[in-house]
Image (cartoon, rainbow, N blue to C red):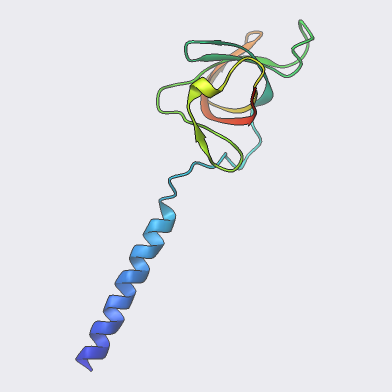
Length: 120
């Protein structure tokens, strides 16, 4: 009986450890909600991206100056992680904002998540 109890306790410990490992997914996934903007990166300065839905329109379409805080990682839709340097003018990105958004034109915001949809 003690042996059975020991085996069951060991099995529960192993199952518990396995479920913890699954919960700590090292690859980041995009947020479930829709991004705040998806568009073409038209400029990159330090850790700021200018993202435009329609770069050919001087005004009227959505545009954003997005600051990428330290610690924010760039991923693709499959969760692969990239350096921010991978994002260049011409890249297509989706961005989720975090915190306050300055309602200027273009809007100014901080990124909470960045997904590289397509890169050059």
